[in-house]
Amino acid sequence: MASFPDPKTFQSHAPGYWQDQDPKKWNDWGWQLKNRVTNLRQLEEHLTLSEEERAGVLLSGNKLAMAITPHFFNLIDPTDPDCPIRRQVIPRIEETWDEPYEMADPCGEDSHMPVPGLVHRYPDRVLFLVTDRCASYCRYCTRSRVVSGAGEQHLESDHEAAFRYLEEHTEVRDVLLSGGDPLLFSDAKLERILSRLRSIPHIEFLRIGTRVPVFLPQRITDSLCQMLQKYHPLWMSVHVNHPKELTLEVKEGLERLANHGVPLGNQSVLLRGVNDDVEVMRTLVHKLLMCRVRPYYLYQMDLIRGSAHLRAPVSQGIEIIRGLRGHTTGYGVPQFVIDAPGGGGKVPINPDYVLQRNDERVIIRNYEGKTFEYPEPALQERIKEAPLEPAAQLCGCD
Ligand code: SF4
Image 1 (cartoon, helix red, strand yellow):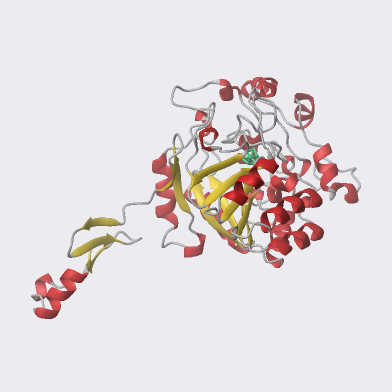
Image 2 (tube, helix red, strand yellow):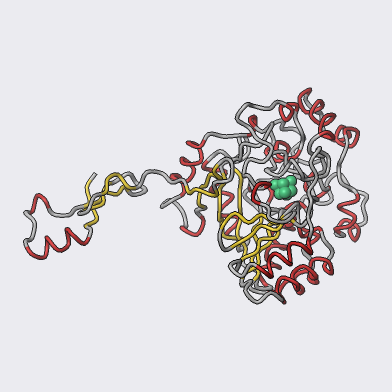
């Protein structure tokens, strides 16, 4: 392949290694799925693997399968052993090393399932795991215990039982379809699920969590978008970690969804050697805004088994937020969260902008490190009755 393009731009990498492929086939999402890179032989045709990767690939069949769509495989820079795309999808031997604090189900989903495949952890919303298949498999996947079908545990998902549960539970107003990846279903199968959910009067809001627009942009067809727009309000959370993932085809797919009225948010996972860097994240959020996607969450990586080699410290996530907030468009700053281990839900993590707080005042620090004082109502009243001495007046000071 030619030299690798600038990740700040939107470029097509097609057809890359598949030079002889008929463009019509290349653009067919079924062809992309059938021609995924799934074994060592295919990988070694194009890449020189390290010992750690070779051993990881050989063992991946026991845990989380390896599969990489041709589209995504083309984004791997073969000359860079630390390529951020490579780190996300090529297994390494470290995946078989479990640390004592790691868990198979770090978000406690299995213990919050009233019926198979339906996670009801928050009062008014549910997570509906409709499939265990994805277009490509992320090595840090929080559901690697069930996703891909390679491990010992399998996803039990009883759609009919889930619909019945939702019909009875009138407190549920928001359903997030996830998995696996719901956009791997045919339009007809996905529509059956959406229309059934829309027939339940108290369900106000539908969401789809998907990495398909990034792994398999060919799937974002006009017919899919036309079907989705019948079920509004329907929002979509995509999953982009590095600016290189935002190619021309991905941008066009995201724009197609936006043109059909689907509001788009992005969830990134903080990954060591991939996006644990302010400049990388700044480029990512700028490109996302150009694709009409609002950066939504930056996740501290869950304590999933065999993922320590990809985990960055929480302090790095805080530094990234500090480097973005105030320094770029507010819409481009995601919320950094930790999904509390064991099933405590998402907890927002922020740099310390509040230095001090009491009944009378809040001392805050801005993005430049300057401190300011904001009066609470008790102090506002006191000032009205007796203006403060000049020295005690409110000021913006360092
Ligand atoms: S696309 Fe999502 S569910 Fe599938 S492997 Fe990646 S993180 Fe896991």
